[in-house]
Length: 232
Image 1 (cartoon, rainbow, N blue to C red):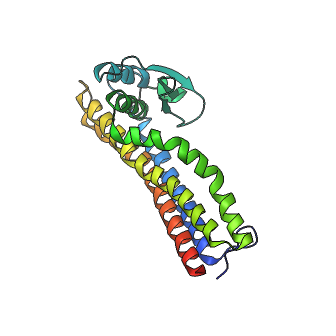
Image 2: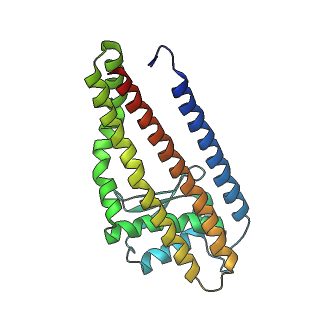
């Protein structure tokens, strides 16, 4: 069986690359489609994404969180280090269902932190380990390939497995933030049922990107495990 990292790839790895590119392309297309559709539907209250997120934060016990603008399209995130929602310009000033959905999703992450949501604590604890593992696992893997040392293969797989674990822990964090966002939007007075439905569609599309990434990583991990076992 050819292992070929750096000097050729076998068909199994090519299939993983195709799966990664295919799922990545499909999920990005879907989220862009849903965002485009619902960015054309204004919220009847006339509020912006920042307005609704700020009110959600105050009502959910995270009123100390700030909101600031960040460059780019769909680059929104919550950073617990500076306790800020970083919202793209289209979502911080936009008054559409899409902008409100994304802003409230990021507010959901801030609420998770404020309330000590357990998966967030686990994910945060994994960050330094995953940062180290992601920077070193391929080097260890390549060393095992060139030196023919199975133990290095296994160590590399263990390091890579931390990245997979991180992605799996990320899923409930993202799902819960979206659940909080949709639930809050559903309580807003004067909004049509379409607003809640649209928010759910936008955030479901966003969640699929995390599901796709986790699926690819699991397949990749299984491939490496199988490849190492075949060496024995």
